[in-house]
Length: 196
Length: 109
Image 1 (cartoon, each protein chain N blue to C red):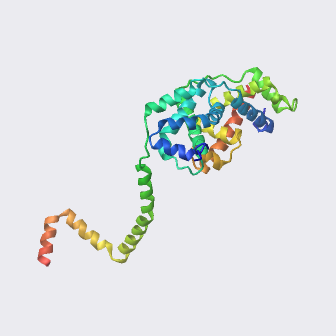
Image 2 (image 1 turned 45 degrees about the vertical axis):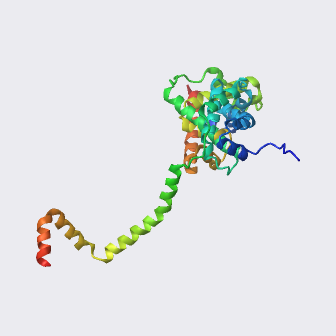
């Protein structure tokens, strides 16, 4: 008799979970943990990554009855991960107290150097990346949760309007309008910070 | 500085590089991560595929929408074809004074 040692497919695991085998969820957790963490790390402050990633898996578990398997489990899980990050920022923006600070001189210098042709390899340097990240975080903190998500997906990750719309559950038109507005806001924020 | 300068492709590239660097530079999750998730999941207990009543209702509504629209068009055409105004007047008289309306009806009959 031949024993089938091949790994069970995602659909099979989901079916087992829905049949009451809670422990089968661990297979999905181990398989997709790194991918979920990559999605979350980009969008959430490092201190809250683990908690948010946990939230993603718990939500995924609770939503399993709605999983249809049409686009694959990873795509389905990515949607949950992105929306969990979006919810994180929505909650965060409700309670946050925004500091009225502008960019520091160091950041302004960095921006000046990037815009001018002084150094084409500047953004590859480690110290420059740190400043870039701080400028980016500073600007994103000043946008709404919606603008932030759409700017990250379309402007920073380079997804199409349709892809971003699928991830966020919005219409393509809404994503395009938001994307245009958020880019304009980012541009304005950076320009104003340079003027002060 | 003019805001058009900010559009510069270099700013976009630099911000993109910083954004993607976040993905790889973040701290690793604790060793208990998997155990914590599974503990939470076990606490929730088994889940079963239940019919999603909301989506069933939505499907039902959208399937009925064209039928309803067709019915409205037919009724509107019928109301225009057969003089709806006189029926409406009768209804108004009845609503205003149902007793005398009944008497008139009986006398007429």
